[in-house]
Image (tube, rainbow, N blue to C red; front, side, top):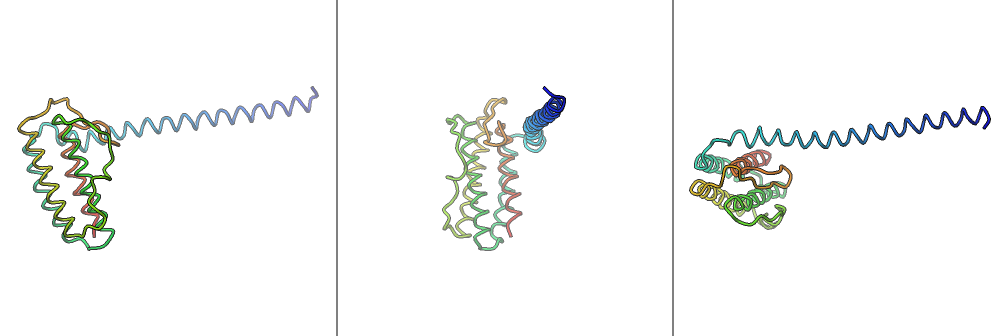
Length: 188
């Protein structure tokens, strides 16, 4: 091989090596970001759902849901009667009904991994219908919390949330309360 050929070969090997190292670093970074995202999610679940509900009685959580439900219903009643507001209401109701299914698992029902979409009210439901549906749905959530109070599951019971991972029944109740409050504040 000529001197020029060896020089060219050496340069291309260095470039190739740098590309490989760059790809390795990028892949490692993606893996680290994915694993850290999971860790961050677990920290957030612990801080915002599990910790605030830990040690609270189910009856207390039921009372909190009841009071918060009235606040949410008032926001829904005051929201504009347009497509975006009705879609937001359908989302809140669908998530709450879906969450009720997960609470029933804590009470002994079989687990089924599904999405919240089938639990949403019909698209053509008007605002007043949606407000009534929310009130009925929240009353059912409060009833489930009271049922958990009467027959509490073992303390280590966890029921899967599709994106947050396993949650205690208390954390599920807090999740449903905070989700509805957050989403209802976004309605105009």
